[in-house]
Image (cartoon, rainbow, N blue to C red):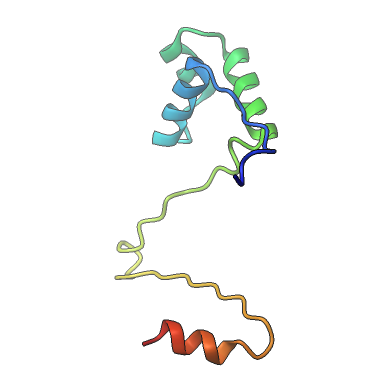
Length: 95
């Protein structure tokens, strides 16, 4: 299996609750989160910092509404091709 040698991070209920809150609105303050969960602001700060350092949270990024910007559809496609293989890839995938 691909995940055999990987160390998994264990999250408790507070970590999961924090993730749910910031997943809804990443701008939620630590104070608001602490009040919602009945824990200290320091606990929220330390938990989020731990999740960032351990890679559970990779980045904080906005969700952009492309329609408001005038885009009907946004597609990002990345292709890595080794020398001389592009024609074969095109034939297989563009039919």
